[in-house]
Length: 304
Ligand code: CP
Ligand code: NVA
Figure 1: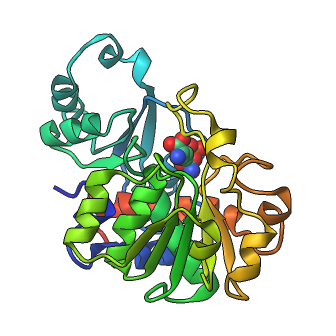
Figure 2: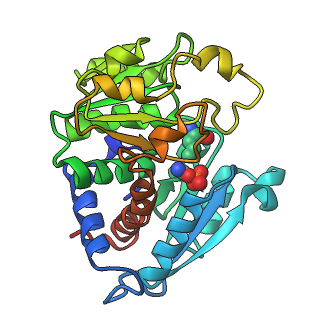
């Protein structure tokens, strides 16, 4: 089954081919793609959490590939009042060609995939956000060339995005340094997986050390969806703002990356996110091209 659960779970070579396909789709321009590879195919997009980019980029991607997408708020489905994930997955497979799901609990995604006869795509969970990190790597390479052996610094929360960057550092072979406050480290099982697989990551609590000579400085919101009210962000992340001071120690061409939505004055200064080093709008755009690649692979087994 061609599921996208996490970047590290893809068969060897698929991740790189997905990026090549995304690049091809980007170069093909906007509008209905010649040959409409997903003509007559339908994707369900199930959301347990809000979304702007993921929802819209998947929906437009389906349209431009010749298919269509159905937006489903999980609360308004029978799932929202207790119908099991397994039963939902079995029913959806009778109507659809693919499911993209954004869930509060990663286990919901895993259970959906376990019972689904059609491909399931991770549209963000509490543990990971692979589609975004694919778009980020595509963006990095557009700006700075092959990411292999480059240095990426992650500053702030060891959240779903940080975890997917760890997965990507093995698959795309770059150095990843994560500066996270005590108590906000990436997922322990993913750290263990990185150790077991000799992945080139370093975890520390000093943002300056993490950014030294780095090619990209990445961050994300201090408070992820679902974490509201559980932490005091100003206290925990006080020392973890991406600002000019961090870019002074980074490489001369270093870029700023953020998956968005952003909070100016918290995880990043306005000067950085709206300044010349920022590539955040390209990251957002590339979600569309990456989504097309993921969908044409998952639903039609088509890669360039
Ligand atoms: N970056 C991202 O996934 O954005 P949305 O939450 O708007 O989908
Ligand atoms: N870490 C953020 C990413 C949003 C796209 C969250 O989970 O809210």
